[in-house]
Image (cartoon, rainbow, N blue to C red; front, side, top):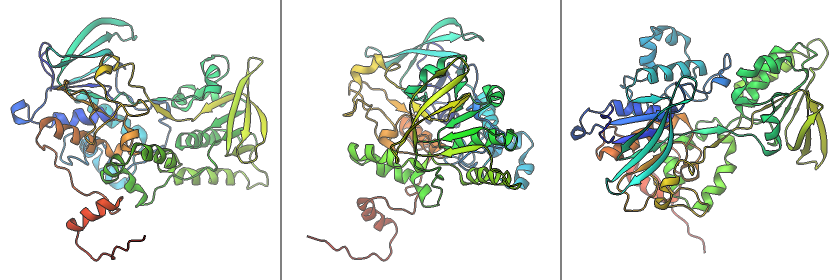
Amino acid sequence: MSAQPDTPHDLVGIGIGPFNLSLAALAHGLPHGPRDGGLATAFYDQRPAFHWHPGLLLDGATLQVPFLADLVTLADPASHWSFLNYLRHRERLYPFYFAERFHIHRTEYDAYCRWVADSLPGLHFGHQIDAVRWNPERDLFEVDFTQLDADGEAEALGRTHARNLVLGIGTAPWVPEPLRPLADAPTVPVIHSADYLHHRERILAAEHVTVIGSGQSGAEVFLDLLRARPAGRERLTWLARTPSFAPMEYSKLGLEHFTPDYTRYFHALPEAVRDRLVPAQWQLHKGIDTDTITAIHDELYRRTLHGTWPDTVLTPGVSVRTAGRVATTKVELHLEHTDQGTRSRLTTDAVVLATGYRERPLTPLLAGLDPYLRKDSAGRPRIDDRYRMHLDPTVTGSVFVQNGERHTHGVGAPDLGLAAWRSATILNTLTGKEPYPLPDRTAFTTFGIAEREQSRTRTPGPLLPLVEHP
């Protein structure tokens, strides 16, 4: 649903990644009139079309969440925009049924999202958002944009108005400071894993390749390179800052950190406690899928069957201090081992940086709203339990945040499994009704003592007596 050009929208979304696409899909399922709880929406993205991590759509790579974590199912299983309905439209429902897949291929998830993006009304690709302001005279947000042509060049300027905004600008590949000058230079291939497939042939042609980063992307890139190199002439090095090439926490109770119950618990914690917890929980979302670890070990083991070891080096606990070019065709990495306190140098012909992503800063986009924003002690936006930024009371509209609230909502902020929940929460808040009823409890784990007291009324059962110590 979209409003007329001269009519304010109820909601304007900035960015069309999976999270705002989820919100657009669930908003489309609401009644068409505002009196019936419907919303007039529009979503904008500067890219020419939807594409999800195209540089990492490796053959055989799967999502790390089940297919039920699509755009809508965990909030509305009957939605037209579910993954199962996508399969039905593609006449692939029975093949999927017999494949017995719980974790689908990334390429399939990308195709599903593009099917939704190509079919939903109110999505405007090729539109770069330039500025956002609050107009106190009209009680509306003003959103200025530049319409781009097929080559990404400016074609026209425009403005739209909205009663509410939702920011879903996502994350950007992060390159460590010592390697940034090299990543920007064209002569030696130093690329982020986000662009791996775009440069794969060039990387494969390099005599020696170094992969930096111990997460899922680093493991997948290393495995892909390993499989493509001849036995005994692999010439591969894999380095990581983490103390080990560790598996991701994937136990059933461990996964409950990605439930709304844990999100509520985390949001209620003091700011200092939240800031301490997030980096300590890295293995919940930055480890390696055990199937990928197994595949790497199996491939390495297979190459020892004839009595030789593969020409590979896998070293955790290493950081890159500095880096530079040697002549014009090689890179020299200056390394330090954290535990040993030793330093060394490594010369390589290509580097793949699987160094993760960082949230795109909201400050440039929201410069026009800065006088109205309320921030925490670290200068970050304060965000309430319904994903709204804290604004000056004179602002009658709301600014919601998608995948930019890890500091307030925890490790689940970028998780696809919470996309539909967050979208439903936003829509329930905007409509003042409850078009998408959400459960009160989603985890067996009770994360805090106060919640345990509340849970007694929900789930009666035997409890141990409380013993107080002086």
